[in-house]
Length: 384
Image 1 (tube, rainbow, N blue to C red):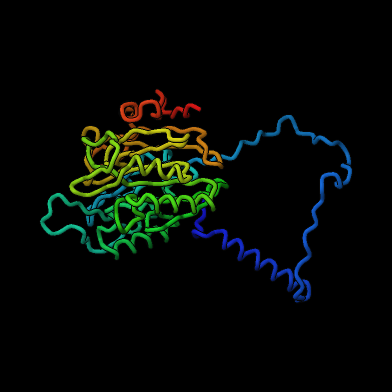
Image 2 (cartoon, rainbow, N blue to C red):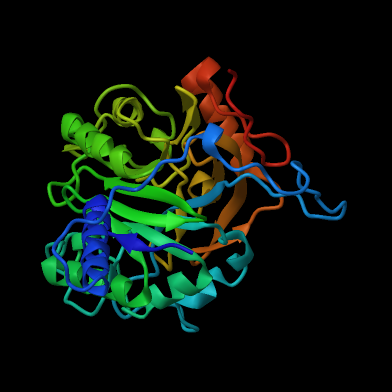
């Protein structure tokens, strides 16, 4: 279960406290006198216990597990474009994956408009420009298969302009989903009893801008004051198989500055983020440990319908599963290997090619800070 609250949840709590005091005053005869100070009993003043000092625990009593938070992340998600969705509905895309998308908090990058607004981002006759849109009831399908939160910090959120953006948010709201990625936005949820702050960043002025690291760090610091765990979603980096390897410095794609991915991920962890998960290159990238926190730079493309490539390494993606403790520490994790089959449907890959590719990329790009996926898909914890 999760709930949405505003960026200043502590203010709401203070308002609740004030209301409680007001009710107490009314029930006490509408007196304006302040309530008495609570008494404090020291351990030495406690009465002697009656009966045995050690409680008797039945031998068959279940052991209580320590509280943990299980998260899942997928990369770019879309369902075709205007008027061209799967004949059986967008739900058919997830037919083989519903068991793999269940977690306390399942997240992804929503690489599409959800609505009916006219597509406007590309000029007429521009062959290399792509626009994505799916019906608004797609949001309900996402909720049904297990999603909880979506990142909107990407260029396709505005494929239908501001009208499409507002329709997308309305569809998500109606389905009970939360989103991140608007400028300055921090979304707070409670999942598995853990207070979580979610933030999304992309290389767009209409998003929380990943090219402005100082502002991003201030947002993370604020989030850390009001949540136990901070998760940052990023949509960054050059696109395509030629850019599977992560290189330091700003990544420029077709003249567009898509940010310094490594510097940004490290910088938000320096500011207090506990997990950084990414998308944007449309291919897998490696994973890295930084200060004991996991960075998954890109999980590739999760779904499409005649929109995203399905050949070669473009077809490989995955579902990242991470378990954190209430302080944000890594407890365990795994990667479910996926393969995108035409026309863009994800399916579990029994050959586990995702694991091999990610391990190769991680080792080459990060050396002794690489995150390693074992032969059964488990993520090896960082070396202390």
